Length: 150
Image 1 (spheres, rainbow, N blue to C red):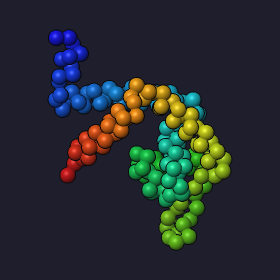
Image 2 (cartoon, rainbow, N blue to C red; image 1 turned 180 degrees about the vertical axis):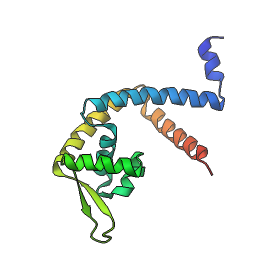
Image 3 (cartoon, helix red, strand yellow; image 1 turned 30 degrees about the vertical axis):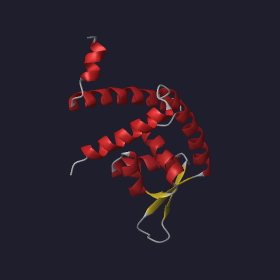
Image 4 (tube, rainbow, N blue to C red; image 1 turned 45 degrees about the vertical axis):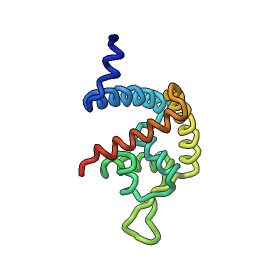
């Protein structure tokens, strides 16, 4: 039996985690290279991307969506406001909330950058057919939900 045959037969949880971790690292490296070319840091890209796809959001809603702590998201939003890529305004209905919006400059930039990043990630996942991607996404969601603490 060849090494690859033995590895494929190992279906232990540890092996599943190891294969998933190695695949994640490889995709992360590809994504980081793509983002490096943009001139934006990862947290700035993630914040702009969520605003592009979700629209204006309260500052405290953005952080959890992009995996940043309250302090880190505040610093990231400060950078985006300073670069005139986003604006921060009081919410008309709840003055305690600060709403973050893309500026026209920010929308133009993130739209271009996101399209380039999407193309780079498409290239990174080209080994999978559409049907394989659908299956993988379903399996990863199932795994993620099952692994969440009670």
